[in-house]
Image (cartoon, rainbow over all chains, first blue to last red; front, side, top):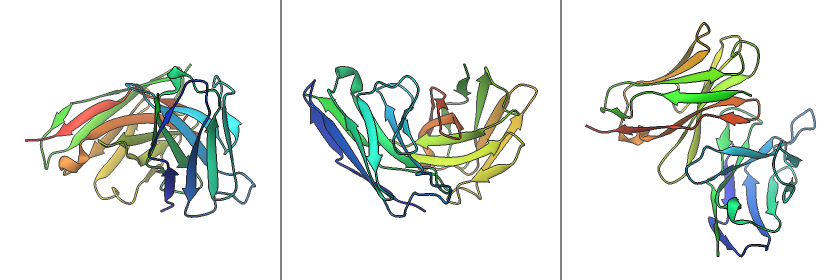
Length: 112
Length: 115
């Protein structure tokens, strides 16, 4: 199985500042079609996970452009610029390159 | 807009079977996409369990393959999860979700395995 390692485990951010979350894959997530199958989700308290970023760097519909995704074949970053109080929750990366689909262990974002 | 909703017992005894239903509205499960079950354990770990696709084919996580079954009722636009021989380690919140990119999720069903 592909292992996704997220860091940090938790992050505390002052509103208006930026935050970055790292996700490292045990295997390249670049497919033969040139697509990098790395996704980011946010699970807000009491809610189900919501898609933020698909295929490493594409913003999902309705997601504020304060969120951005970048990376290489194995190392990925989710950046949140100008963090707002509504951004609290647990952030997950996920790979959809091969089955079984796997998720990172999650990063909890808190507001200072 | 597609909506998914899980339903089923919140408490299951060890060694029994866990059965959940995902009811889908706003999109036919036979049209396209894969229809997944994912669970979240206490402590935040997410595990993909398996899917049934629009043609009715299934794919399961090998870690669960011997205990899991995903089926559907196309007349009701529902799909189902069954996990056999449950233990306390199957205590989790269970979600159904639509892929290819998991862009739609149900609200989750909390299941506790306890005697």
